[in-house]
Amino acid sequence: MCGIDLFFKKKEVVEMEVTFPKGFYFGSATSAPQSEGAHGIEHKAPDIWDLWFEQEPYKFHGQVGPQDASTFFEHFESDIDLLRETGQNSFRTSISWSRLLPDPEGEPNPEAVEFYRAAFTRMREVGVEPFVNLFHFDMPASLQERGGWESREVVALYERYAQTAFTLFGDIVKRWYTFNEPIVHVECGYLQQYHYPCKVDPKASVQVAYHTALASALAIRDFHEIVPDGKIGIVLNLTPAYPRSDNPADLKAAHIAELFANKSFLDPAVKGVYDPELIGIIREHGLMPHVEADDLAVIREHTVDYLGVNYYQPLRVCARASLPNPEAPFMPTYYYDVYEMPGRRMNPYRGWEIYPKALYDIAINIRDNYGNIEWIVSENGMGVEGEEAYRGPDGTIQDDYRIDFIKEHLTWLSRGIAEGSRCIGYHLWTFIDCWSWLNAYKNRYGLVELDLDTQERRIKKSGRWYRELAQNNGF
Ligand code: BGP
Image (tube, rainbow, N blue to C red; front, side, top):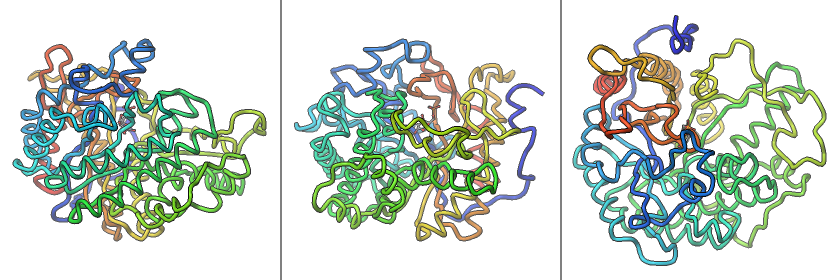
């Protein structure tokens, strides 16, 4: 058995026929900063990834920066043809704020307007429903200098950007998202130093989280006026928190982990309110954000029409083994330890556990605790390093491990749907191998291989299989 096959040594699901409801969305997801390229100043103003790469290129795998993203800006027409060739009826990408509005207070960049209109129109022409997200970790650098999400002024400018995008593209794009994985720019940018501005500042992290939830609600309010026949959601990375055991201390640890990791954005986005227990903890640690009059009414009244769920890995936790240092900067792990369950299946390249059943648990959680709101798997996928080792005699990458990964997740998802959860589709991360933040091109996720030297695209075995999956509405 070789490396990648080991992922599947313990399949959890026996092969069975799996089918999805008629009209199910089969597609994939990417983001503007990870796929467009054309980062030169003649095309767009710098965002924080351009800025950070300029400052500390050695932090990026192979010192490859965002300017080397996979040239969708240049090749969008033939890339959209490949969407059809791989059977996709829908596709998520994002708009780059700093491309559309290089001056966040100025007029839209005509080149960007032309590009996005052409790309979204072309998708529609070939029968691919565009799902468009407004913010995928890419704060304009000029706004980061003005405080980023810590600043109320940036919330107002995000609302202006959202209104601009809805007005410019709302006639051709009917499915929108306000944010991708907002907890990530909170945690990685303000606690863990994996995103710019690389701060360790718990108080700022709470303000950033709160401003993000508020900005999302403001955009939803405006969307419903500007595009009344569309739907808008938010993409959340849900990582169900599983306790090590039924011991009350482990259960409590998992309960608190769930508050921070999932409910912190899920509750305001879907229910319009924050969980009082989470607020109690934030208050106890002296981290309450600055809130202005009417904010909470905006959050309460403008909830999402549907939900995007990114799922990669579960969160396993246990009671802390030692008391936290009360003087250390506050982290949610004040209340729990991350638990490394013996025997868990790992994707060693990304360091993430593979646990497909969580998709079923998410489906049931949404059904039972979030009003059975309509939702879609907006990301799920497997990043593998060194895929060229799997190139077959005809030159195609034989990524059977990816096919197995998708099958297992879809099997559990279909059970959730059979039990009444309203999931409308599955978007794989990702379409064409793309640039992945600090990991750059280390791990490849695509249905389509990208040759970094020539920019040539080649459909992998999984891409051909995906087409059959979509044609058969199952496997
Ligand atoms: C998600 C992000 C994506 C993508 C993906 C894979 O959290 O929304 O942008 O990058 O994870 O993760 P990575 O690229 O870090 O391997």
